[in-house]
Length: 123
Image (cartoon, rainbow, N blue to C red):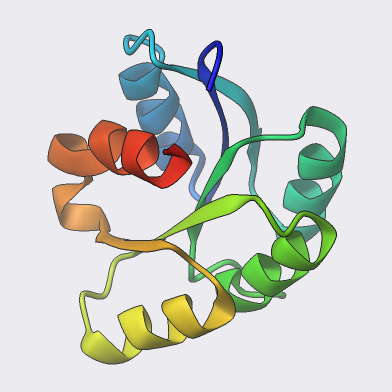
């Protein structure tokens, strides 16, 4: 891959989005190309920005992260999706992977592993 990994962040919590963006902007391997708080925004931004990786919260209001993952991958099958959740359960991870997510991360440990998960997903 040439250039930085293009990342789209999707979460309904604006503080969480801002924190993720601040964390990732210090890593030269990636570029945050957009932030969305709803499924509709995520789909629109993905079509406009063509990210390599989408980091998506599974507990989005309305159309949840599982269905949004399916919709994103239907539009761009080569896209890599990292699902994040406040619940660290085997069922959530299994359902995220069934929806097409390549990686599942628990929000509680994100600060330590998020950059490496994005690089691994994009590889």
